[in-house]
Amino acid sequence: MESEYFFKNADSYDTPDNIPVSTLFKLMFRSRWYFYGVNFGVFILSGRCGARGELDKFNQIHYSNYNTKLVEKCGGKVHLRGLDNLRALEGKPVVLIGNHMSLLETAMFHSVAREYVDFSFIIKESLNKVPYFKHILSSLKAIAVSRTNPREDLKTVLTEGKKVLEGGRSIIVFPQATRSEQFDEEKFNSIGIKLAKSAGVPVVPFALKTDFLGNGKKIRDLGPIHPEKDVWFEFAPAMEITGNGQEQQQEIIRFIKSRLAQWNKQG
Image (cartoon, rainbow, N blue to C red; front, top):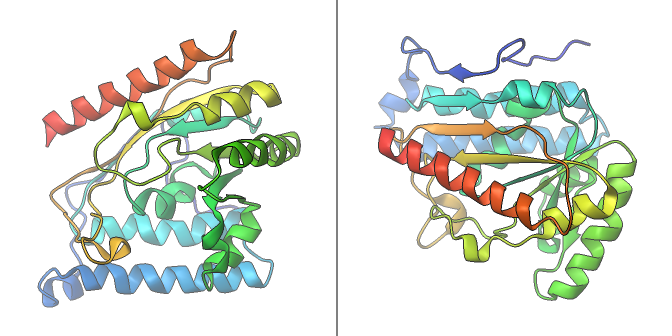
C-alpha cells in the first residue's frame, strides 16, 4: 500500500497561504483545547493501532499527518528543509541527532521523515507505562532509559541501540533529554555520537523549532499554542564519525545554533 506522504519528490515545503483555518477552532475562540482534542484523538487511534500490531509505515505516516495538518488548521505555518538529505540515505540506518523543543516534533516526525527513514526513539522508562503510548513505543522498538543513572543509560543505549541499527532501523536522539525552548549546548551530550561510532553508522544532524506548542507551567504536557510561531524542521547531510567524534559533535551544535538564530530572526 502506498503511503500518504505529503512531501514526495520535494526537498522543502512551506505551508501555502491559502490553507483555511478550522472553523471549529475559530468557534472555540482559538483555544488550545481544539488542538489537544484532535491531538489526543490521534494519540488514541495510533495506540490502538499499535496494540493490534498494525502500526506499520503506512499507518505511522497516516496518523502523524493529522498532527501536521492540525498545526495548519490552527493557523500555524510548517517549513521543511533538507528532505533530499534523507532521501539520499536510501533507507540505510543512521543516528539522527538534534534539539528537543516540545511534544510537537515527536507527533510530526513520521509525517516529515518516515517516508525515507525507518526510525525509533530513545525514551524514558516511565513512558512505557502510559496507556496507548506504550503500544506506540513497542511498535517502534523504542529504547527505554532511566534518566537517573547516566552510566547505565549509556550502556543500554549502546547495547540496544546497536541491535536496532544492525536490524536496519535508524534512531533519533535528543541529547538534551528534557524539552526546552532554549538551546543549551552545555546540556547537549554526545550520546548520539558515541552510539553512531559504536555501531559504525553515519549521523544526520537536524534542527527544529516547534515552540508553536508551548510547555505548560502547571501541567507541562498541556501548554499553550502559538500559531504566530512557525514550525521548522531542517536535516543536514549525513556525516561519518571520525576520531572520537568531537568534530562532528561541534558541527551538529553549530548547525542547530545557526538555524535557530536564522528562524528566530524571521519571527
